[in-house]
Length: 231
Image (cartoon, rainbow, N blue to C red; front, side):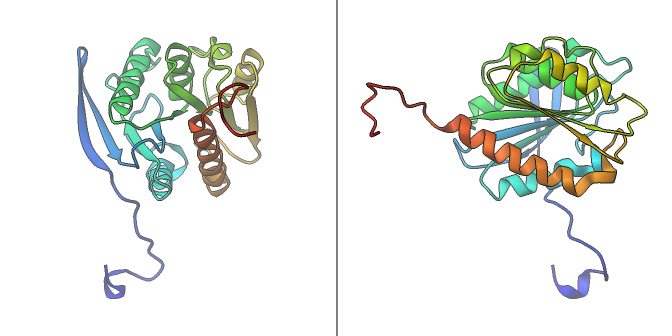
């Protein structure tokens, strides 16, 4: 792209990702795949019950996937097969676990889940069922379907909610935090509503840093006495 083709003030859009379709026994599952280095870790990103690949906060998922890919971390952006309110938690969990299986087959290494609203509860429940998940982020999560948050431990859980969320009160994330066990973190963003777009840049920086650190930590071998490793 040359300077002449960019209008003043325009910014280049994030890379779109590679369209793929996962074949499951419950039907095809549409995804956009940003490939990373084998074994460097990957993030699975899901939105709310309204579906789509872009996520909250003014399309934060494409930007997040592009930034992580520069560090070699892969990203799978997924759109749920079944979209209706109230969201069918079991169907959403099925979709996310199919995505986790795909990333495992790709040799991704450590896998983190990120979900918004309905997708936050889905991510928590999927982690409770799958030992392949290394970390979880729930954005503006609902409580329905997230009651087993304690089973995410000992893997880290990050909860982020807007203080001015009128669709799902920040009390939802506080409740999930009370159910969860350490390691867990709760971040309430002042001035942010359900989409979190009012604090988008702060959210992006938080997610990139948190995900890179947790995936790197999950990928390190645990050294024990008698392992032959140097002190």
